[in-house]
Length: 219
Image (cartoon, rainbow, N blue to C red; front, side, top):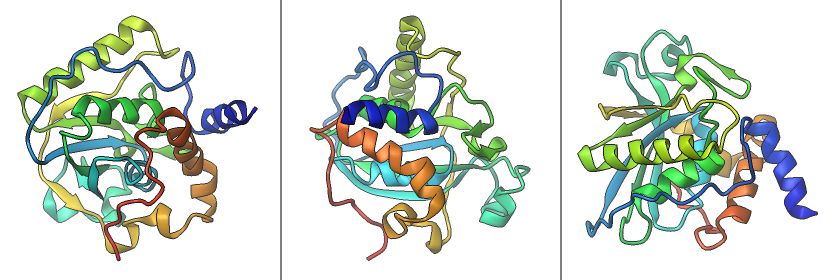
């Protein structure tokens, strides 16, 4: 019953899913013995994206910010116009010996975003809310492309995956009041309606990865 309620809650925030989360694990996900790595992802409002990944084991820090445009337009007011080329994004610093890049993407597609929505996400409209995987190197591109192809072949969504895969450019951290927004404002109406269901789904879908105490940017 609890799982059914969570599924209904998640359905309000994430559409297009053909079957219950979590999604299949990436078939191609080679090990990485580096001490630290970075994943740069866009997929809707950065409050929820950051809030989800702050609760994932192996993640050391998550920053909300902007990528895809110029430095002088990387402000919330300008990005919100949808004309800067930027997307609201999160920069995820993680330990690949604890959580792989492929698993980061599995969480992303399972519980953090709806990859069937183009230039919007839920109630948020505009190209600044587009889904995009910003790859740091050829290895990340291989994992991301293989996973999108795997999910497409398996027909796990009721509509085509429109999440883009592009080379990572500069990432600009968002204003301080945006950082840890979900952690600091759990009762904010937007968070309750759109983002809390994602976090609830993460806890159920990935119990071995879920951490109750989030890693925070702010003290």
